[in-house]
Image (cartoon, rainbow, N blue to C red; front, side, top):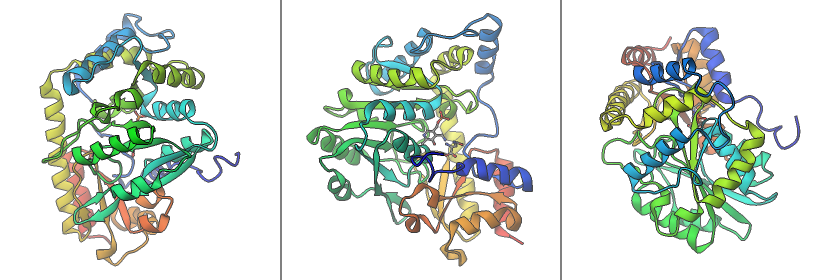
Length: 384
Ligand code: PMP
Ligand code: GLN
């Protein structure tokens, strides 16, 4: 393994899912739903396979049906107009969208500011692109993790090329407010920065929170690459269908990298996801409402078990502080938890450069059936 990647090793998700399998523990680690997405969308995929749609290499930018559906979704939901032919790119999941964006837009030595804790592929992809990551840490305030805008401003240097934003935010569940996003946008315009914004949890926002795409702010459309994922929005994480929307020059750049990573992917699934994006609003509302019930259930269970809970305003993850349990090391805690309580969770420290800052935090996924969450909560309350 070369020096760029040596520090990354095996992803925590693979390690913890393997631990769940070998111990039979309930897997609240890796974020994937334990029920599949809508039946009619699965049927659409079967139809595509049978009808020979996408069984051979689909077009490089993605099949026209899906690009049109992505553009329609952005317009309907956010009033953002993108040309399906020049401003939409289909990728092999959001993961490839992140990788291709960073590989396409960074010069060696460019600095990338990322919100810490950050989704694990960000650090590895910045490294593969030869960039330097500059973390700005979200800090606990009452029941959520917040961004300090002064810290963000201070992190920008003459070498900063790009802001890598994620809202709703994995793993903290923070949803950046309209005011915070406006300030980020102003900074990007003032310092002439590119922005890559990972909005894969756009449909999972709870309570008073609202998801506002960064691309909607003044001066942002032309400098922002927005990333979405069918895995997250339709509960088909195995299909690996994601997309990018951005101005033509940015999409062209990202496509240049993408064509040498996977060239194309997921032919038949692209047709099915095009149909999924056209589902009535009731699908998206029910998806969110169902996840809200699960959030409340797991958050209450964790609180009863003695964790300090940071109530997520978005995503399907809840971050906890284990110090009230007399624990301080999330790694040790998560490695012991399958034996102790039959539950798998993720130590947030893996999402930090400043590992000590993340040490007492542990993430649980709640995209699971309610009976599974109830059983997990019961186990956590009475560990052996
Ligand atoms: N970004 C974030 C913040 C995520 O949580 C995930 C999924 N775990 C991804 C990107 C990757 O999405 P996909 O499965 O579509 O590649
Ligand atoms: N995004 C999911 C999570 O945060 C898992 C993705 C993965 O396994 N790479 O848990």
